[in-house]
Length: 424
Image 1 (cartoon, helix red, strand yellow):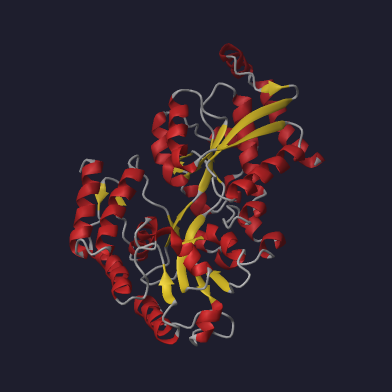
Image 2 (image 1 turned 90 degrees about the vertical axis):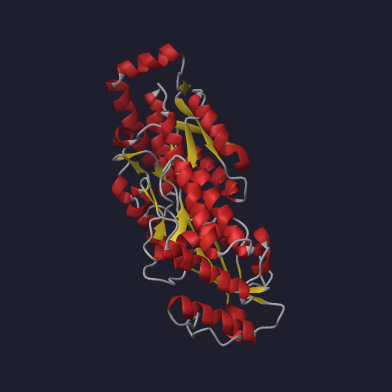
């Protein structure tokens, strides 16, 4: 505890000695950072699920670990978090630090109220090289870091070991016995269909919700397609057709059911499906079912190169006059990353290799088996229209899965809508 207090206190003391102009500015705006001897930080997060409890505990541990900074935790409803955060940013009423998905940075930075972090990081003693390259590179905009990575959360594959063993598809080491590539994976599903009772589906995924977009994103990325490359829209492509053809094939052959939506979690958890693609955040949920003997592994490589859809929670520091608060916010963000084994209990992959390699993390069940997915994650293309683009593509992909349009027509429809959004 003593060492942490010194590590946090030293940069702040130096800052206090060197930034009289900033202090004067703080007084002018009435933004005094201190209450007693502590710097108080307001912290917004959108963790409506069980991961909110893990984060609240981490904040409590941080506050108890040192005497310089006190963080006030505010958990917000996920549904309206980003409208609320954007409004706060443009109205100069933002918190001192907030969570943002890395995919949302391109929509928040144009507000002009998200602080670039390189100078603050240097003052706070944050070393970017201690973070995983793929994750920290995703926070770069025009060469500047705009966020501190907190985790990676990706879509991975879970499988029911008992069901695969019953179908003769489990190797001695517990891995799946299947041939490589898309055809090998599909043949594995066909064997499950033949060998398992008729009331158990070989695979379940959300064929009518966001999972359809995430899996399409993974499969086109595995074929090397950048479906939005700067201003160039490349959605209407052979790679997109290939990705949707295989999902359509799985539906047509009853290798996975349609219209399950968010029930895919419960279908797999209750042993009614042998395989599922879902996010790492499901690990904790599946662990609560004692009868479920499962394994969690990276998203399978079906095409030319490994790739998976993924996102990262990051921490942004809104612009404000009080630089002490901003430096303290970066120190808090770095502390969260350094102590993210607790956060990993929620299923997320820590952003620092040193944390992943630690004995404490390696002793966690399941998590070390899929941690390598952080290197395979392909983030969605940066765009200030990112949410609208995702919605437009998803709408057309779901229409394909429902058989309302052909694969080719649905892909063309998605392409045209994204071109209209991007002005091309």
